[in-house]
Image (cartoon, rainbow, N blue to C red; front, side):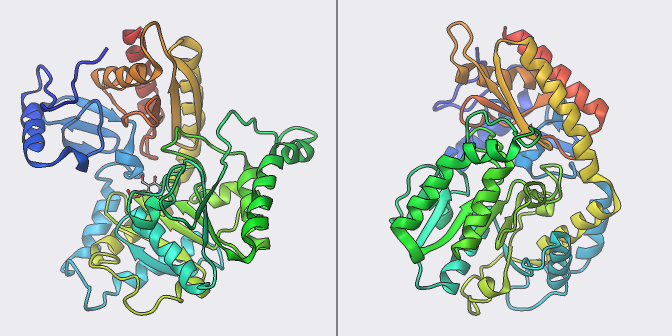
Length: 442
Ligand SMILES: Cc1ncc(COP(=O)(O)O)c(C=O)c1O
């Protein structure tokens, strides 16, 4: 079912001489552990909006936004112009000096977050570094407490403490995991008996939290969760779940850290997912779309927590560099002047309809889950092919039909996450491309 191989030779594809040369050179020079495997190994030369052009001249629609990074699309004219204006003549780094771009970006970010408790900004150079700085802040502010709670099967990055709280087991003896709803949880909020249905569904999670409290009492330091589980296969929880965690943290003096590295800046149909879920984090961690492609992340939270770190305790070479800060400000300018989040909501409805039509048409599609413009299409086994094989084949078939997807999540879930600026016509074109691809793989 696949036209590529993943072994000791670089992937080659007929009719793609330039891409093959890049793939071979990369294979020779850059260890593959440095890359995340994608079945397509797409080689991009140019990008604009939601369009990608390969080095061999093929054009594809970007249904991935990089890895949910290019929320404003590629080379957004207003973003690029504002960014260029801000960085004109500015040094590349300000490690041992200050730049006015840094407080400007911080002020704009705090204003966009619009929560009184989120009033201190600590920059980071990746999402995982932002998560680590959030945990360090909690540890410094509450040195007498040890236990870090995380939701099972979450993804917070691979480095250090962020890696320790990723997945289902941890090498760190102070980490505990609690369950995250990952089967079909119907939204009960519209039912007449919504409250009692929600408390019935919540009961096992309440029991887990009570057991943690009974075991660790005042030793509970922080709880880190995501608005939805992305890497585990796109599982989007009912609202009562995140509220339960938020309330439990407030009642037990546990620092509530919300990992919005992926969800921030409009992805869920709200500027920040905590608005959508009606929760009040003590710290939020932002990344990916924050700089619309610039490598900058941020840990934003209560002064009482973030101010507990002394000079140098959370600094590093690149964090808060002027170019990253300029990207944050330029992106926020675009969000303020254009209806990016409104467009995401409108396109979300169309995406849901489009993906549901694929689920109804093809036995290879088992399920569709998502919100805003972050969707998962879970594939099913077909004939002799496992769901994982079907998913890989679907990614490749989409590529051949001009739709660029992320490699499967959790091996069998296609991630569909176009830039938030996508138009209705582009979205329909992408869905039709997926339809042809699914037809082709049978
Ligand atoms: C929810 C979430 N948290 C943290 C991270 C880690 O970010 P980074 O890869 O920038 O370290 C990611 C990356 O995919 C993520 O999706």
